Length: 461
Image (spheres, rainbow, N blue to C red):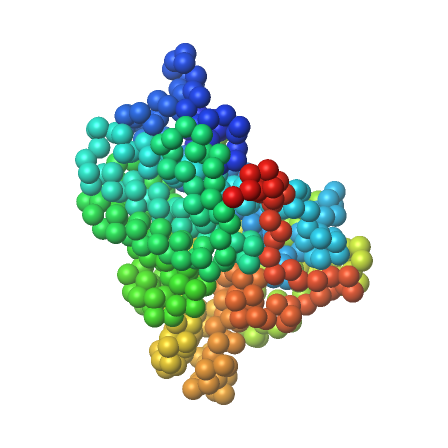
């Protein structure tokens, strides 16, 4: 997935990225470095295609510090893995709670990356509005695509920030200087309400987008590259939002319009693709076996608390030839994350396995326990485990026990994919996560960025 638009849109991607006004553009036209204005004023199909691919590239993350660090931070907070960086002990101090996370430090880069992706999606949609070559249906497709991407990255962003909330109101890109006028921070709950609105708007737009997009979707969306099928991806993201809102009926409805398939492949779903081609990036989660510098080592309870025969343990982790030791910890870490076969192995964005587990949770929470057991048994069976009626008969008909089972299956099915910490937080179970040193603590949120704090101090609302 080569990105040619990333340098063109390097400025103006974030509301705080530059002190210049949005329309301070280069007057000299250079065909090798077209201005941002040229993409916003009646762009060609080729330019729109570049922008669409660029948004997908940004959504995946141009650097390891976006999605790679998002998963490592949440994986560490959720005590799934510890990122044992030999040259940077902040992963063992700040992230594990020995000292506070620096709000001006490296760990808020995913927040910036998600904000930049949101800006790219907004610019893409804005450019489509001026494109005379597009039909109204094609414009609806770009609007719906952009709003789906925005919902996805905003959810990641607010989940990192937790009760700090995020900004949801920005300029409409139509007035000079508006880029430097972001709205105030809103609560976590208000942010989820806005994210739901954006996702629902995107779904409505995709429903009126005809049979094809006017830009290229990369191979990771092979079964989701039409507006109709991409809308199913949109509804899967909407189901995630409803889950965090504890809107169980809304979650079930969104799932019914997604690509949920209780009889289908659990691996079905869009993926981030990677390659070694020039201009592309490799999978940031892949590590060679027994990596000595930056391994993602396994918190041992993932092994010891697993049910016997669970194939997810062996498919997602691997033993180290030499156990890893971390200063201040007395544990000998014998295993590491190993779910990716190579640095070009694709990574799931959201897949049917997660949808089945969300469906199970919605069924438990709405009182349909037998349907929840049916869904849980699908996931258990795929992992080589016996049905609940045989393995855990006491869970049948027991709502609390089935919630425990849902969270446990999510723990193993969605290992190191940015879910465990959020799951434990939304069920008020952060105190159940292990502390492997006396100085450790489990945070419930990332600190607000220092740049955001400074901005509000200089620009009181």
